[in-house]
Amino acid sequence: MLVDNPLEARILRRGTQRMTGPGRSPEKPARMEAPGGTTTRRPAAADSAPPVAGLTARILELQRQVGNQAVTSRLRHAIAPSRPFEPRCTTSQLMRDGDLDAGAGPQDASLPGGVATAPSPSPTDAEAARVAKLNADYDAAVTAKDWPQVARLLNAYNADDIPKKLALLKPADIQALDAAAQGSYDRVHLFIVQPVMAAVHDLAGWKKLPPGDQSILDNMLGGATNKLSQSVRTALGAQLPTLQTQSEGDQTRALQAVITGGGALPYLVTDTVSTPQVEHTLSGPTARKGFAFDGKTADANEWVVKFKDGVSIPIVAPKAPTPGFHNHTVQETADALGALPKASRQLITRVLLNPVTNPQDPFWAGQYRTPNFHSYMTAGAAGVVTIYPDKASAPLPGASDMKGRVVHETGHTWAYKTWGEDKTKGKWLDWKKAMDKDRVSVSGYALADVAEDVSETLVAYVTTKGSPANDEYRKIVPNRFSMLDTEYR
Ligand SMILES: [Zn+2]
Figure 1: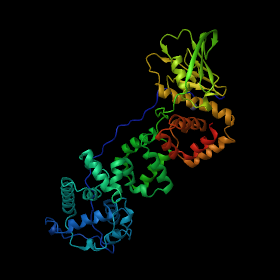
Figure 2: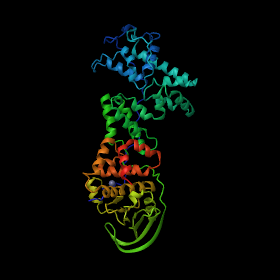
Figure 3: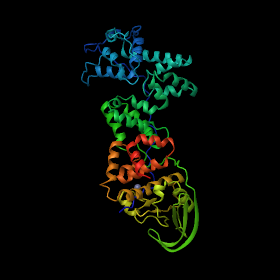
Figure 4: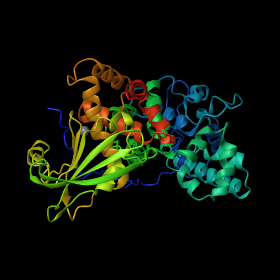
């Protein structure tokens, strides 16, 4: 049976509302670990004393040099009683290993290794003073429009504070800051151009990902124009406040689930169709008495759409539409067919604008446990595309979505005719290998089955041709696109 699983017309949409977490101040350096592994505490009597002069500035300097996150995570490791003590997590070591942090700047050998052994003020007081000084320095640098200094200071803030600071700057100032940040504080640059990716890069779990996974995620997150990247940014952006509180291992697993789990993907590929229309003329109609539509025999009109590339396709529509239902017009259908590449269009033998809904809808409703399941469009190996009417109260897909769905459905016809009906051999296996290499799929629906993956990938491949989104998708699923380069002609 080659008829496609009919697509649910009601496209499932995930909530896109961004969760907001409580604002957090720049991360705390917590207590200091003395070299040798003992935690130093200052005498309780000194608790109310002001911070020792110079120490706050020194901690601040340390954070600017090695990156805030490195300081915090190393110190947290070193003092947290629930975690095993790691000898390398000492402040002196930390300064040598500072390059492990995303925000690490050049190391400074002049900073003493024994910071932790200096008389220590209350961590709370020291932290408050540190944040106050950082904020004051930052504000002064912004007022002075000293952008290299703003970039340097901004780099000392947390992933969730940087966007807040940036939101307060004027567009022209952000541009100047970005120019100053590039090359010396690329973390700040990334927060300006791609804040979700920057925040993900700041996660400790990100650094534990294999480089291949990092590059896949960057390609998923980084596309400026394609809808998959938008969807992944929205989903990960919403997850960030939770992710930031999780352990390194949980973060790594959550990020890997974004690659293979499909939860962050759009349900269908619905990028705006950018392919040029092939010119066509419409002729007819010819009356067809007692035409056998899917599920109903009715008098019909047959039109023929003739394309400039020589392909001709009959479109059959009922003379009288079913009351209470509506369907696309013959003209809309001809236009949608004109967006197809010849590889697909030449396989279509006929398009039916069916008078009644798919007789198999109740079956699919049970199969998918979706009451009122509605098929929008189907296509079989014989090349007949059937478009079903919907209740007049339900809007029909717009022109761009309709074109995408025609590419999807005729993609099934193309794949079965070109690669055969046995999905366990030949080119189907090559496609599965390409899927394994790419790991990512272009939509949630593509995960249903290898045939759906082919069709959804074709939608991305065909409908974005000639636009930047096409290059973005090629980075996301390179092995599938390269197979289509040779197969889909
Ligand atoms: Zn399908």
